Amino acid sequence: MNFDLETSPKSHAYKLLVGLVAPRPIALITSMNEHGHLNAAPFSAYNYLCTDPPILGIGVTNKSGDGFVPKDTARNIRRTGEFVVNVVTEDIAQQMNICATDFPPEVSELEMAAFTTAPSLKIKVPRIAEAHAALECVEYTTMEIGRSRIILGRVVAMYVEDRYVDPEGPYIKADELHSIGRMNGLGNYVRTRDAFISIPRISYAEWKNGKR
Image 1 (tube, rainbow, N blue to C red):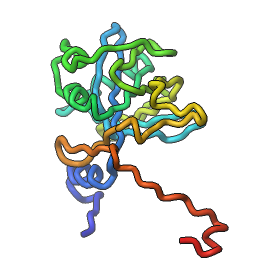
Image 2 (image 1 turned 180 degrees about the vertical axis):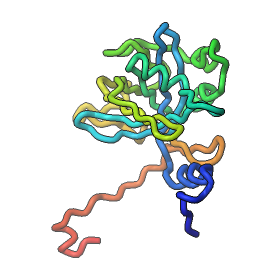
Image 3 (image 1 turned 90 degrees about the vertical axis):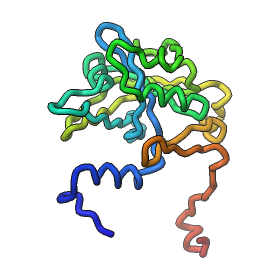
Image 4 (image 1 turned 30 degrees about the vertical axis):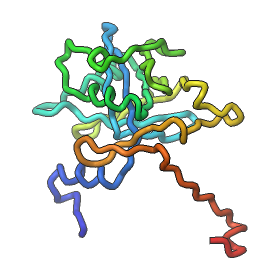
């Protein structure tokens, strides 16, 4: 079946893309407005894009309804230039889901999810203390495309619990961290626990010698 996204209803692109671009990592973003009020919200239109400099990309759609009104996360980042990506693992999945609730502006997602915060190393926005890893970011640029904002953040510092770091690399012990990923459909996720497979890369010399 072929789909011409230039002529299809706009909703088709979302339904198809989230089913094919999967599993997706989840960025549980903490941000702060100009008055110091904190916001927490998860986004799965997210990945790292380059490492020198280290850049993350997050896609944030506008609020539903008429006009082009940014979500709190995008507005906060635009005004303060800082945010933290907290890594979502199995043990905080339910709390992450609470942060996705469309609470009124005066309600704190962090409080509703029973999250606590810890100071970041280099920026004012705190990380979530219950998250085992967090990436501190400063806004590199924000692009408005259609009804979305693509935010590029430069990672200036990281926090990772000692037990998940192999200091020889340093490497992340990802098979022990148990991150979860987002799939298509409402409420569908995937675990990484006991799901790792190893497919060693084949060098050109090995390929020429018949290794497949």
